[in-house]
Length: 112
Image 1 (cartoon, rainbow, N blue to C red):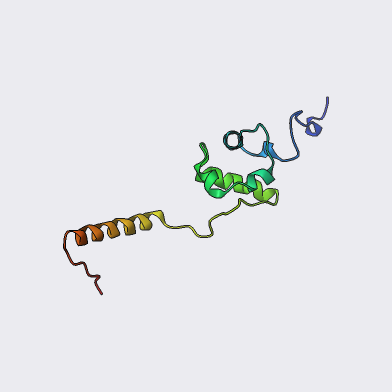
Image 2 (cartoon, helix red, strand yellow):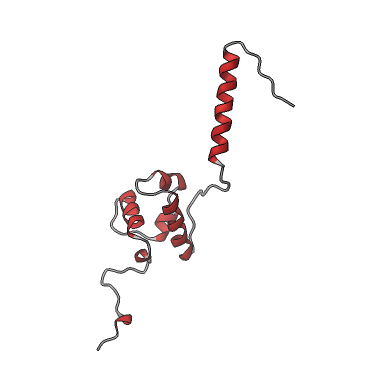
């Protein structure tokens, strides 16, 4: 009987790409238009480009960041603060409503 723990896949690389789930690997391959990539190449991609890529969402970004961190890299231009999307949307709606009222001749005052 042979010990299978010493065996490696024939196509495995040192970049640790095998540690990424298939969905993230395929999305990154599609984004880069390459069959294989390194953590350094992924770290060089802008955060906004990654977020807009097909097949990559918030959960995928978290998985990719964890993979990059395990190799000593971080996504470039990662936003430093997270904005509460719901409150930002509420503020935009209120500002639009105030602009609409002012456009039609109403005077809008903020309450104290």
